[in-house]
Length: 403
Image 1 (cartoon, rainbow, N blue to C red):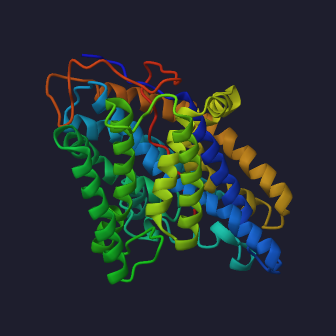
Image 2: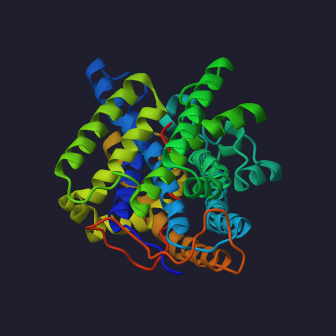
């Protein structure tokens, strides 16, 4: 039984690029303020900000891909050990950022609503108490009140919930045919979309506002994670023609499909099309050598390493910059200062909190005697041609957000 899992450095770099793009999107969203920008500026701004939501879906799909790797490479982790490993990986950084956001809020002056805009309008408005802090740290995520201190927490809620299903789905991929699982995935997408429409939830949905609505939102995003599992299964098990070696036509088809699905997802506000675009992007990253080489450059890899911390900490840091300057900082200065300080804060958070949480997660999730759904022994690990690997478990938990 192999005890190592492949790590795709190009995907690490892609995660870092997408995380930084979200930071820029949130900072640039401040341009939505009075006086209103011209129609040309507004359309250009909207076009850029759509990258934010695509990044969210990309990381949902990528997370399913990365979490599924341990089940395709012979890992023997029990279901509950897997869940404890997820808690150890996600919660310490969340708790540290919630504490940081609380301190920054208490130490910086409030701003009037007319001094804020974009992603920062509705933040840090609710009173702080023990119950609300607990709901933040425990990733309850039913309504906006559960993420007031740090809005990016909304996607971590679905990350945690998706982790409950991923081991079971990987077992289903091993036990039943690929086509049966794809039909199941299509049924999940269709039923969740119909349910959201029937109960009047917004599209895209960030919060369900009620327990039932939150459950519907969970199933809505679950399809993106499970699609990532399907890609992982195809690439590592050699299922059918999912991973042809050296096929230029296939690569060109994936590039064209990515652009088509992305454009269709933007026009129709369809997370299904955006998920398919994200899936095509993963295939392209793993198949196009120049793209891999660019994503494996040291600065991009550094962003990938701190991407989870950067994702969590950039909103509190950016809002603190606005509050300390009284909202009078210019857009250009803000677009330079806020991301720079966010990267610095993320580097510190990674060194102090995230690195130990990764070690704790590996210790908790270390394989034992108990077998889990979807685990398999005696199979040599496989990876697509042209990818590099290491024995380090991929930090698969990074998601980004677009408001």
